[in-house]
Amino acid sequence: MPELPEVEVVRAGLAPAVTGSRVLGVEVFEPRSLRRHDPTSGAFDELLTGARIEAAARRGKFLWMPLDTGRALLAHLGMSGQLLLRTPDAPLVPLLRARIHVASPAHGDLAVDFVDQRIFGSLAVERMVETGDGAPAGFSGEAGETDAPWRTRLPVPVAHIARDPLDPAFDDRRFLAALATRRTGVKRALLDQNLVSGIGNIYADEALWAARVHYDEPSNAVGPRRSRRLLAAVREVFERALAEGGTSFDAQYVNVNGASGYFAHSLNAYGQQGRPCPRCGTLIVREQFMNRSSHRCPRCQRRPRASG
DNA sequence: CTTTCGCCCTGAGTGC
DNA sequence: TGCACTCAGGGCGAAA
Image 1: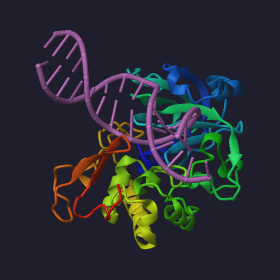
Image 2: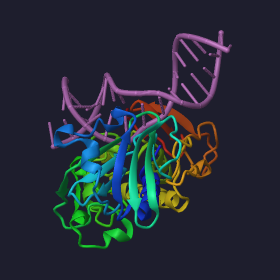
Image 3: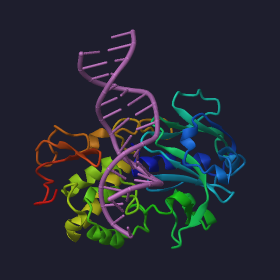
Image 4: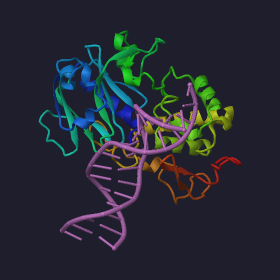
């Protein structure tokens, strides 16, 4: 499932093709994929058609394309979403939920296909709000090196989403202070997009393994030293996955050109139950937590004392 | 405010 | 061959 590295690969693949392009038309095959779109602000296709796409930007797992209308096309891939660049007449695959036709100055006419099996992902056209701190709203590659208005604006539904750990404007101290304050399990905190964005179940387990922290340890019990180690581990697993072109556990994720971004061999904990911990050889276990699965090494990641 | 919980959603895989 | 069942989990609104 797409987390920050996968979404970034999609953004980076999309950006050169869509930047400066004009939306020619929209085809919607599955209305539920637009359930996040507020129709009272205008019909999805009407708000898109004719607009010029200025860039492709990302914060955490949220991806948006600022439009010259002052709004943005917002995409979240959910569990199984993909954004694929196709030729305008490419055959319609069964799971295709929407197709956006654009005229690209660099690549001619293109189809941007939104494919999503489980329909947890969504597309919407949203209003923008200022970040307030003057820093770029998200990462948008070279296009972000501009003073265009969209640079410091983000779609309304993303306003409450924290910056991600690869964002230069990410506030380490604030995050560490929040960990020290919260009484919830540390993995819950890692997955809380209001605290730090971009982390999903896979990279949470990988970072916790790398930092040797048990997922259910109260976040305020981890302490500053290990919390810093954990944050560093998150960044390391992200950077490594980015270097490998994005990771996905089940090959649902396909990058913008349709090639698989599957690099399961690089996973140390997630999905590795029954296999030896690469560090100590103890067999990795899988446990139910938060209605999802957590993977850990029973020896490297012991639950400290009494809790839960 | 903080935290937890239930809901959404369906193709692939499994077992009988 | 077919059918019932299970599994995957991000984000959000409601509730405690």
